[in-house]
Length: 202
Image (tube, rainbow, N blue to C red; front, side, top):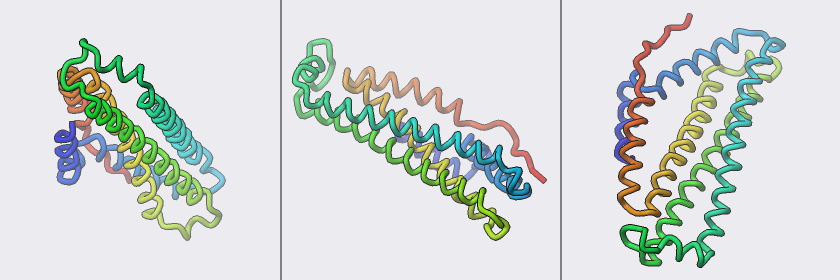
């Protein structure tokens, strides 16, 4: 999974038009420019779009924090540790390894929580800039930068949740983790590839 995402970042930097990330960012840049061509009183739909992104980021950050709390309680439960060191669990079942698995899973959810909070922060800033009176003083490039940054934090948060699925399977042994990683990489290769030509907005 980690190697796949390194390749994805390389593809995005070299050929962004071939990735869904680059395709979406291209459309977001055009969206911001179109929004600034509209009068302030007609920007209600644009602000609604940003509000929807803020709500989604806030919800996912709350879910991530809730899962962190569950894992924290899980780590402190001796009954849970005995369940995941049973004979049906394949691989290293030492207490130190069990804690490493839990801490790794907890770290993924903490990263997801932080990223979704940052995404909400950037989207809130975008809503301020879009709804600002005399917004002609605000350069569209500044708003584009904030939208892209918020989208990038959103993306990293989602990828952290994807990683957490693999780490959850790791609790049951390396073989379930490997199978989950292989399936997820295969699915992401399809979802992250873009074959639609970039539309050149006027």
